[in-house]
Amino acid sequence: MKLLLSILLWISFAGTPDLASIRKMYADVSKSEANAKEFSGKLTGISNNDDKILVAYKAASILLDSKFEKKLKDKMDRFKEGATLLESTIKSEPNNIEIRMIRLSIQENVPGITGYKKNIKEDKKYITEHYAEQNASLKEYLKNFILQSKSFSEKERQFVK
Image (cartoon, rainbow, N blue to C red; front, top):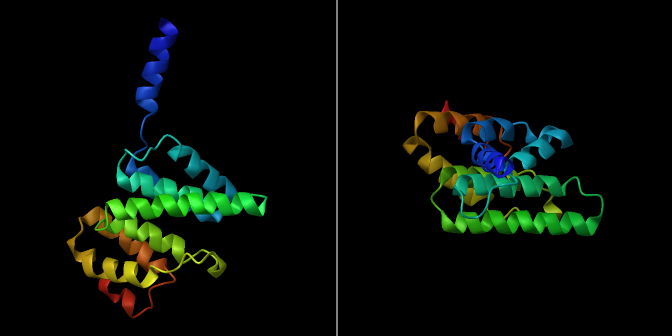
């Protein structure tokens, strides 16, 4: 009985990762395989019923993990799994600026051969048009992304400065 109670307590405290820590990790996730694995590990317990922003980060973690698969088929399968999850998340919340930023960050960094680059202009436009409506902490997070993003020119970055 004690074991069952201990497990239940552990599960309730282990639960859902907080969004602030996920955002912080996401900035460095592509720098190394270790960062990508740690990020992915934090999100393994996220299901489609959780906060859609966390689901989008989980999708991004799957897409990033695909980069480190050894076999081509495994790379492709993981990539498709992540892209499908991300697209379904965007479909469920098309007006969520952070989910759009996640997709933009993925699409601007994947190889062209994947064919997964078709929403860059759309997401960039959405972020530009809705940036001013966001709360201060989300604006700061988006600003940090925009200032380092390959998709925004120096002139286009002026709206966040």
